[in-house]
Amino acid sequence: MDAGTGANLNLTHIVRMSQESSNRTRTTPGLLLLHGRGADETDLMGIENALDSHFTVVSVRAPFRLGPGFAWYGMGRVGTPHSETMQSSLAQLGDFIEGMMTAYNIDPAALYLMGFSQGAVMSAAVALAMPQRVQGVVMHSGYVPVESGLDFRLKETEGKPFFVAHGLYDDIIPINFARHAREYLTGIRVNLTYQEYPIGHTISEESLYDCSEWLSLRIVGFES
Image (cartoon, rainbow, N blue to C red; front, side):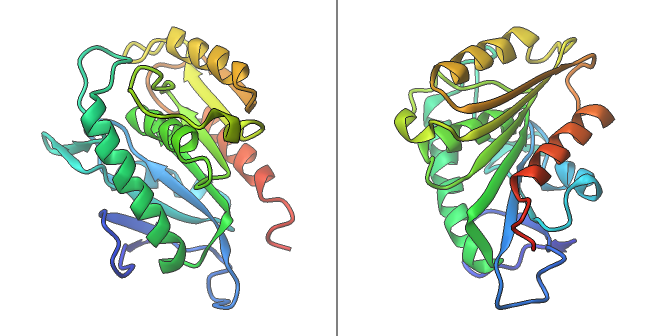
Protein backbone atom coordinates (compact mmCIF):
# COMPACT_ATOMS: atom_id res chain seq x y z
CA MET A 1 0.00 0.00 0.00
CA ASP A 2 1.39 3.38 -0.99
CA ALA A 3 0.52 7.01 -0.50
CA GLY A 4 -1.00 8.39 -3.66
CA THR A 5 1.59 9.98 -5.85
CA GLY A 6 -0.38 10.33 -9.07
CA ALA A 7 0.51 13.58 -10.82
CA ASN A 8 -2.04 16.40 -10.56
CA LEU A 9 -4.61 14.46 -8.53
CA ASN A 10 -6.72 16.82 -6.47
CA LEU A 11 -7.61 14.68 -3.42
CA THR A 12 -5.40 12.96 -0.84
CA HIS A 13 -5.48 9.18 -1.23
CA ILE A 14 -3.67 5.90 -0.76
CA VAL A 15 -3.32 3.05 -3.25
CA ARG A 16 -2.96 -0.70 -3.35
CA MET A 17 -1.79 -1.60 -6.82
CA SER A 18 -3.23 -4.55 -8.73
CA GLN A 19 -1.19 -7.74 -8.95
CA GLU A 20 -1.25 -7.05 -12.68
CA SER A 21 0.32 -3.60 -12.33
CA SER A 22 3.80 -4.84 -13.23
CA ASN A 23 2.53 -5.17 -16.78
CA ARG A 24 2.63 -1.50 -17.72
CA THR A 25 1.04 -2.10 -21.13
CA ARG A 26 -2.18 -3.38 -19.61
CA THR A 27 -4.89 -1.55 -17.68
CA THR A 28 -6.43 -3.05 -14.56
CA PRO A 29 -9.89 -2.95 -12.99
CA GLY A 30 -10.22 -0.27 -10.32
CA LEU A 31 -12.04 0.03 -7.01
CA LEU A 32 -12.46 3.44 -5.40
CA LEU A 33 -13.17 3.39 -1.65
CA LEU A 34 -15.12 6.25 -0.04
CA HIS A 35 -14.96 6.42 3.76
CA GLY A 36 -17.64 7.50 6.21
CA ARG A 37 -18.20 10.72 8.13
CA GLY A 38 -15.35 11.62 10.46
CA ALA A 39 -12.94 9.02 9.08
CA ASP A 40 -10.17 9.34 6.50
CA GLU A 41 -8.56 7.45 3.62
CA THR A 42 -6.91 4.90 5.91
CA ASP A 43 -10.21 3.64 7.31
CA LEU A 44 -11.59 1.47 4.51
CA MET A 45 -8.14 0.48 3.31
CA GLY A 46 -8.18 -1.78 6.34
CA ILE A 47 -10.32 -4.21 4.31
CA GLU A 48 -7.91 -4.40 1.37
CA ASN A 49 -6.84 -7.98 2.07
CA ALA A 50 -10.44 -9.12 1.54
CA LEU A 51 -10.65 -7.47 -1.89
CA ASP A 52 -9.82 -9.14 -5.18
CA SER A 53 -6.12 -8.73 -5.94
CA HIS A 54 -6.86 -7.90 -9.57
CA PHE A 55 -8.29 -4.54 -8.51
CA THR A 56 -6.15 -1.46 -8.18
CA VAL A 57 -7.70 -0.16 -4.97
CA VAL A 58 -7.69 3.59 -4.30
CA SER A 59 -8.97 4.99 -1.00
CA VAL A 60 -9.63 8.72 -1.13
CA ARG A 61 -10.02 11.34 1.61
CA ALA A 62 -13.15 13.51 1.75
CA PRO A 63 -12.45 17.23 1.24
CA PHE A 64 -14.08 18.74 4.35
CA ARG A 65 -12.42 18.65 7.76
CA LEU A 66 -14.60 17.28 10.59
CA GLY A 67 -12.83 17.05 13.95
CA PRO A 68 -9.84 14.72 13.58
CA GLY A 69 -11.32 13.28 10.38
CA PHE A 70 -13.11 14.38 7.24
CA ALA A 71 -16.60 14.50 5.73
CA TRP A 72 -18.08 14.49 2.25
CA TYR A 73 -20.88 16.93 3.02
CA GLY A 74 -22.59 18.83 5.79
CA MET A 75 -25.95 17.69 7.05
CA GLY A 76 -28.84 18.42 9.36
CA ARG A 77 -30.92 15.32 9.95
CA VAL A 78 -30.06 11.98 8.37
CA GLY A 79 -31.15 11.83 4.74
CA THR A 80 -30.84 15.54 4.02
CA PRO A 81 -27.31 16.31 2.81
CA HIS A 82 -26.24 19.93 2.52
CA SER A 83 -26.61 20.57 -1.21
CA GLU A 84 -23.64 22.91 -1.74
CA THR A 85 -21.08 20.77 0.06
CA MET A 86 -22.34 17.59 -1.60
CA GLN A 87 -22.16 19.21 -5.04
CA SER A 88 -18.63 20.42 -4.26
CA SER A 89 -17.53 16.92 -3.23
CA LEU A 90 -19.20 15.41 -6.28
CA ALA A 91 -17.35 17.78 -8.61
CA GLN A 92 -14.05 17.08 -6.87
CA LEU A 93 -14.64 13.33 -7.07
CA GLY A 94 -15.39 13.62 -10.78
CA ASP A 95 -12.07 15.38 -11.33
CA PHE A 96 -10.25 12.88 -9.13
CA ILE A 97 -11.69 9.88 -10.97
CA GLU A 98 -10.70 11.30 -14.33
CA GLY A 99 -7.10 11.84 -13.22
CA MET A 100 -6.91 8.58 -11.30
CA MET A 101 -7.64 6.47 -14.38
CA THR A 102 -4.50 7.69 -16.12
CA ALA A 103 -2.31 7.97 -13.03
CA TYR A 104 -2.86 4.34 -12.03
CA ASN A 105 -3.55 2.78 -15.44
CA ILE A 106 -7.15 1.83 -14.60
CA ASP A 107 -9.53 0.67 -17.31
CA PRO A 108 -12.44 3.15 -17.49
CA ALA A 109 -14.73 0.25 -18.39
CA ALA A 110 -13.92 -1.52 -15.12
CA LEU A 111 -14.10 1.09 -12.34
CA TYR A 112 -16.28 0.35 -9.30
CA LEU A 113 -17.06 2.32 -6.16
CA MET A 114 -17.45 1.02 -2.62
CA GLY A 115 -18.59 3.40 0.08
CA PHE A 116 -19.52 3.16 3.74
CA SER A 117 -22.04 5.49 5.43
CA GLN A 118 -21.46 9.00 3.96
CA GLY A 119 -19.15 7.31 1.45
CA ALA A 120 -22.01 5.04 0.40
CA VAL A 121 -24.19 8.10 -0.14
CA MET A 122 -21.46 9.69 -2.27
CA SER A 123 -21.01 6.45 -4.22
CA ALA A 124 -24.70 6.52 -5.11
CA ALA A 125 -24.43 10.21 -6.03
CA VAL A 126 -21.53 9.58 -8.41
CA ALA A 127 -23.24 6.61 -10.06
CA LEU A 128 -26.56 8.43 -10.54
CA ALA A 129 -25.24 11.88 -11.46
CA MET A 130 -22.15 10.73 -13.41
CA PRO A 131 -23.13 7.25 -14.64
CA GLN A 132 -20.49 7.31 -17.35
CA ARG A 133 -17.75 7.41 -14.71
CA VAL A 134 -18.38 4.07 -13.00
CA GLN A 135 -19.52 0.57 -13.87
CA GLY A 136 -21.09 -0.37 -10.55
CA VAL A 137 -21.44 0.51 -6.88
CA VAL A 138 -21.35 -1.08 -3.44
CA MET A 139 -23.33 0.97 -0.92
CA HIS A 140 -22.77 -0.21 2.65
CA SER A 141 -24.80 1.43 5.43
CA GLY A 142 -25.89 4.44 3.41
CA TYR A 143 -28.81 5.75 1.37
CA VAL A 144 -29.63 7.29 -2.00
CA PRO A 145 -29.47 11.11 -1.66
CA VAL A 146 -32.78 11.85 -3.36
CA GLU A 147 -33.19 15.10 -1.38
CA SER A 148 -29.77 16.50 -2.29
CA GLY A 149 -30.82 18.61 -5.25
CA LEU A 150 -28.41 16.72 -7.53
CA ASP A 151 -29.31 16.19 -11.18
CA PHE A 152 -29.52 12.42 -11.63
CA ARG A 153 -29.18 10.96 -15.13
CA LEU A 154 -31.53 8.07 -14.48
CA LYS A 155 -31.97 6.83 -18.04
CA GLU A 156 -28.23 6.10 -18.20
CA THR A 157 -28.27 4.13 -14.95
CA GLU A 158 -30.66 1.42 -16.16
CA GLY A 159 -29.01 -1.97 -15.72
CA LYS A 160 -26.04 -0.60 -13.76
CA PRO A 161 -25.12 -3.05 -10.97
CA PHE A 162 -25.66 -1.91 -7.38
CA PHE A 163 -25.01 -3.86 -4.20
CA VAL A 164 -26.81 -2.40 -1.18
CA ALA A 165 -25.77 -3.80 2.23
CA HIS A 166 -27.17 -2.58 5.54
CA GLY A 167 -27.39 -3.56 9.19
CA LEU A 168 -30.77 -4.37 10.66
CA TYR A 169 -29.71 -2.73 13.93
CA ASP A 170 -28.05 0.37 12.48
CA ASP A 171 -28.78 3.25 14.87
CA ILE A 172 -26.90 5.87 12.80
CA ILE A 173 -28.62 5.36 9.43
CA PRO A 174 -31.62 3.15 10.26
CA ILE A 175 -32.61 0.22 8.08
CA ASN A 176 -35.61 2.05 6.63
CA PHE A 177 -33.16 4.21 4.63
CA ALA A 178 -31.81 1.09 2.96
CA ARG A 179 -35.32 -0.14 2.24
CA HIS A 180 -36.20 3.20 0.68
CA ALA A 181 -33.03 2.91 -1.41
CA ARG A 182 -34.12 -0.56 -2.52
CA GLU A 183 -37.49 0.80 -3.61
CA TYR A 184 -35.95 3.77 -5.41
CA LEU A 185 -33.25 1.77 -7.21
CA THR A 186 -35.72 -0.91 -8.24
CA GLY A 187 -37.93 1.82 -9.66
CA ILE A 188 -35.16 3.21 -11.87
CA ARG A 189 -34.28 -0.31 -13.07
CA VAL A 190 -30.73 -0.73 -11.90
CA ASN A 191 -29.40 -4.27 -11.53
CA LEU A 192 -29.86 -4.46 -7.76
CA THR A 193 -28.49 -6.90 -5.18
CA TYR A 194 -29.87 -6.10 -1.72
CA GLN A 195 -28.83 -7.67 1.60
CA GLU A 196 -29.66 -6.99 5.24
CA TYR A 197 -27.37 -8.23 8.04
CA PRO A 198 -27.85 -8.67 11.82
CA ILE A 199 -25.37 -5.87 12.61
CA GLY A 200 -25.29 -2.19 13.51
CA HIS A 201 -23.54 0.65 11.68
CA THR A 202 -20.52 -1.39 10.69
CA ILE A 203 -19.08 -3.82 8.14
CA SER A 204 -19.15 -7.44 9.30
CA GLU A 205 -17.16 -10.40 8.07
CA GLU A 206 -20.27 -11.70 6.34
CA SER A 207 -21.17 -8.44 4.62
CA LEU A 208 -17.56 -7.86 3.57
CA TYR A 209 -17.36 -11.36 2.11
CA ASP A 210 -20.58 -10.83 0.15
CA CYS A 211 -19.46 -7.42 -1.15
CA SER A 212 -16.05 -8.76 -2.14
CA GLU A 213 -17.54 -11.77 -3.93
CA TRP A 214 -19.99 -9.50 -5.75
CA LEU A 215 -17.14 -7.26 -6.91
CA SER A 216 -15.04 -10.22 -8.05
CA LEU A 217 -17.92 -11.48 -10.18
CA ARG A 218 -18.05 -8.12 -11.95
CA ILE A 219 -14.51 -8.61 -13.32
CA VAL A 220 -14.60 -12.31 -14.19
CA GLY A 221 -12.70 -12.71 -17.44
CA PHE A 222 -11.07 -9.28 -17.21
CA GLU A 223 -7.88 -10.71 -15.76
CA SER A 224 -7.63 -13.62 -18.20
